[in-house]
Length: 340
Image 1: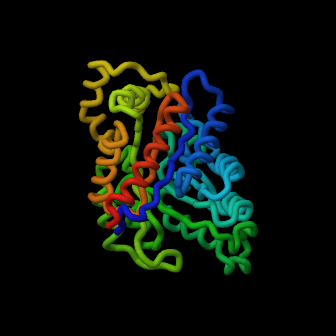
Image 2: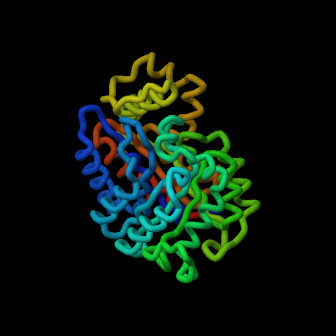
Image 3: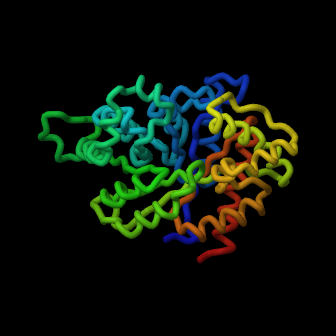
């Protein structure tokens, strides 16, 4: 279990699309954020895979990873994650083997088994995906085999992946994936930013059943939180109205582009108190730096995770940059004030 003294902090990027913004500009903004995050001390910049959502542009995840890695120098870049049932393990190994050769020592491969979309779109992506869902551990092991130098004697090879250093991470939003990560001896990243209910159970399962492997000697955990930090609590609340509307679209299946922020209203405040919102917002830390610092410190203490990953969805790019900058300051202060 970690302490705030040396805990890494990272970025989860969905390439969210504000209303009136082109995809070209969204991708430029993602790279701008990655470059600044690198300077602010963030460890990783992971891109999520989603499909058929007008508010999210990170559908061609491996392509965007190359875009970000090519425009940065040292920050690790990876997938948070590749939804494996949507893909052939061979093609995933080839794509990430190529990325690992282009950017040595900087590429991560996070793997999940959710569809990252609605059932109809998932069917269009890969009609037999449910077979893959049931064989997720075996397909993860298959990717490991493709990356192994021992695979050189196999009939089916991902030649660009053999011997390339690309660490694998198992992603999850329930307890199922915790069993997989523990059995395979791989790092485990939990999606507590949108599905917090089973986090503690999942972490407990992972810690208690973890089996050391050639990839990892002791358990390693990452948990994701939503953060909107600003100079004042009111400013952060105002900026967060865009996130509230985004999540309302998710809950009602009426997804839209990220909308401009509004002055906080009684209607918005009542909406946030709805039990469904409270579940999704359990680990949404919104406020000035001091509020975010206190909540982050408590989260790290309660969970004992080794690393924290941050998602921040705002309409204005400048607000998002400011939020990530303030969070980096929070982590720096926590390391200084609470060294153990």
